[in-house]
Image 1 (cartoon, helix red, strand yellow):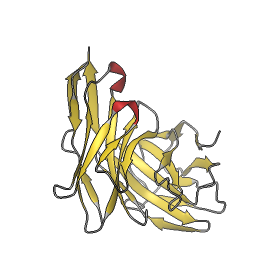
Image 2 (image 1 turned 30 degrees about the vertical axis):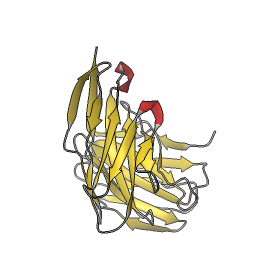
Image 3 (image 1 turned 90 degrees about the vertical axis):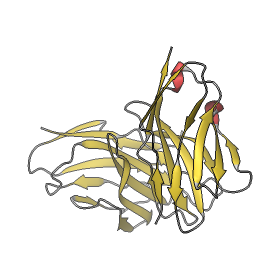
Length: 114
Length: 113
């Protein structure tokens, strides 16, 4: 079955440590997105990529980095510069212009600080 | 840029009662509108979407929403809710190029027996 796989489901970060969240899709979607979810604040866009080897900052990109070396993969690194990383992180993908415009979501990664 | 406002952070309702979850958006361009549902510790699932055509959109699980351009609203309704509808609901908007999706802050629907 096609879908989006996020791993790990739970992740813990120590002070000063960088951590990487994995997102893989086998839907052959061109666009991929990373959102951060905090209680009561909805989803906020961190980074998005509409094509391989290209990505743009979203509304809260500071302290995060991404890469898009392959169409199916869009990993997110939470760097030590992100001082408040505890949140639920959601990866999504879409295939605009194909008559089924919507976001497909992974099941999320809960990141906590030790 | 677009933005979405969900004024109700929580909506308590008794089982089998009707419910309306409110969503208002702002945009200087034509938009597409969506409602997503999120169950605890899971990703979001699409309930319904408005792209064009009829302003009354029917989705899964008996939900429907009406696009009102003059009031810039896209309220979600269900005539009779079930315990299993307890979840958080998000309204979202994107422009016609699908460059970005903007989400509201969410409404937690709590269905009581």
